[in-house]
Length: 274
Length: 285
Image (tube, rainbow over all chains, first blue to last red; front, side, top):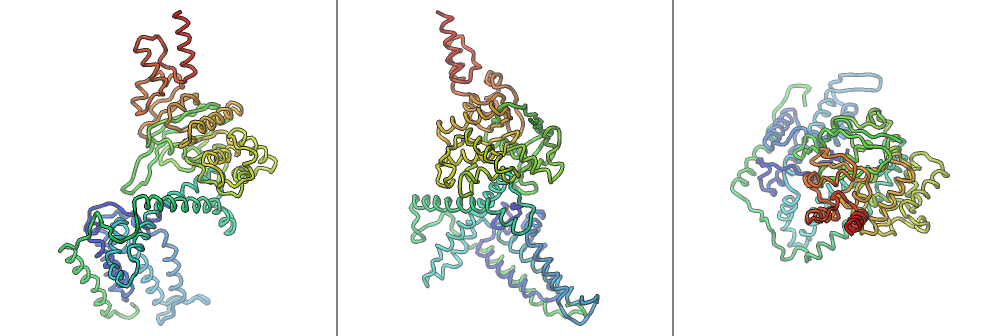
């Protein structure tokens, strides 16, 4: 159950996306998110779906893994689709049943919302979380945000906090699973009862989890101090990020591909299709 | 009493990911009743996976786990009943403690099984006796105790569920020799007195030699050997093949034999070694 959480999970590989400079990947991901929100008609959404297909093919990630990552957001997607179908008012009435009115616009909008949500999750995971190690990710963030150091933003500290947080996601997931299993072995029941009973059933999991999270934090702080960590000043790195010509080329080509959506938005479509 | 049986059981971790790993390969195994069975093997040999299959925490990828001839995964609702019959103490169980007092924490398991207040009190007292949790600790917070004390409370918590089979995964890992002795000694008197089946998982040959009746050796996800303690330790070559070390005392006896002292090389506890050497000594006089 918890193994489905794919946040901060890296799948080793050697694809184009794996090799691309992580800073470029972050920029592209932000752009991808923006473009997804700007897509406004059927043509641009179809384009988005094709683009996503190509990205997945290039990344050489397994489809099963990607689909499993979608599971947690399926509820949100279905819920939004539902709201859009029943609450959108338009001109082309399709179904009328009592107080229920379904318009063609609502169906289109629901479809677009689902495509949008799915492509947001898939796009960001292909571009970033599945193909970038947490270390690369934080180094890239630190490098991208480094201009903020001029106005005394503790960029290094933020990046370190983020990398530590990411580092501990799988550990905590594993720990949670272990504790759940241990309490199950002691006859704890997490699957039946009403909401209140279920929430209460989580206490035997949450308390040990917090206790061990604090213990880990203390141990980590001690270990870092023992290795003379004092913050960002004067720290050097083992892997320096360097932009290569092909990274820049990749960025430019991707920019062109992504901004094409704005052009597609201008294509007029026949009646009834948004 | 209950018989636990594995029938062609395989288990796969991380199926359909790049990290896929076959932890168990077609295990066929029957655990004898009313004995202490030592499950040993190298790190990564599949011991812990096997343990978690015993009470349905994990489901076999293929094959069946049978308790008294019935498949434990047959009905979903039955798992709670299975867990009452097969108690499992995980590795480092002290991290599962959560209640305000030690007494409440030990009572968590039996309470979940719907036992009455009286029963719970009796079971708690009994479990404390075997694990060496003292009266004055019962009202303390489990977080005030030392590591070894917490471990004993956690073991008592599963023992108090009164299972027919008690499975313990490395119950003495990370404890000093005194602590190990207390835990294993307690488990042995529990087994002898209650006549239950106890399955101990460990990679310490010394402990297994001292406390187990039967030994199951695992290697690379397969059952490598099953036999009584005496027979297993007579076969030094077999143990080396499994990537394990013989107990020190057995190694000493083998060396003595090689030097021409007519002692049996199958001796695996210090007490037996003393006996063996004394007999030889007297015989030679």
